[in-house]
Image (cartoon, rainbow, N blue to C red):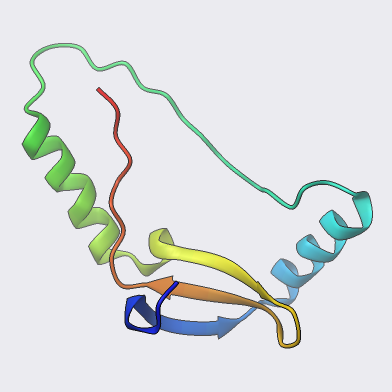
Length: 89
């Protein structure tokens, strides 16, 4: 990740830090992922659909937040400036 892509950097909350510690102790790979699949009926205007998702990501920093582990400084929340919605049609 390049510095110009970063909007903000925050320390982890106590809850986030504890979740990462538990994952580390459990031997899991560290991924916490929520996925959803949707079936839409009717005519879909793809450009409008994708644009609305992009607007949502642009408006809400939490949807652009990733967690980064630094070898010496520990873990941080990093908010990226832009995120491309990964849609498959």
